[in-house]
Length: 333
Image (cartoon, rainbow, N blue to C red; front, side):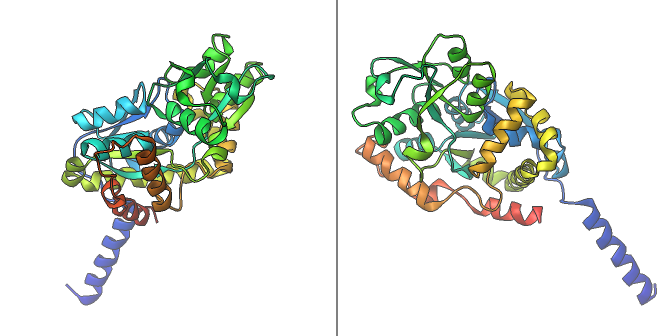
């Protein structure tokens, strides 16, 4: 074979490799938990990655499975029943610190969109004392947010002063039906309730009460990550692509349609996406695992008793593995 033929053949092989995209990750199906039934709006990138073919693009077979709460999803990851969950950062910090839970975070959402709202415009945050307040589950993400908002934003009110009512992701529906006057809501809940003609008064926001906090962690079991790291990296690549897709205004109609599993109408979905983009909700240029935010939350969990007095707080290096996201970002480029 001539030198020219060899060069030409090599060029063809290189072109084929580039056009084929990322090599498919080998392994069985990955089950990822979407918290809430129906899923909370934070899970929209999962559905965008599924419906826009991004998981397929990166060669991974993914099933998205709704769970009642992020707390239940984390337990399923620990049990080995599923491969990944989106769970409250404070919960994971406490589980790893108190029980050395075999979990590690590979991606995160730093900015929480949660608010404490009332259907009664005359109410203030102190009026929740002695009253039922809708949350997901005691110790879940909304419950943690309520604790934080009251502690940092409503002097004289404490989590122990209110009656927490566990409703999974159906707090907004309870407010619309008049079953409750107070609830911890996501921004899509706010849009949906107001779309039903029920005005809301925002009493507290997590962004004001805890501007440097941390909201959710995508967690996996360490032994499963070690056994099939390539598969998890390919999942993260698909999620980075999905976050970019969501931020492109030209995709607004598609994203609103992809968000259907959350139970939101396309009009509510569009309004919510704009609000969430404004607070840099779904990270694109970083992994959402900011050291200062997570170490501050670890210290807060120790101070407030989430981490038991006889336990050492988890170190940042034990809590997260940033290398997976870095490799995924290179793959997306």
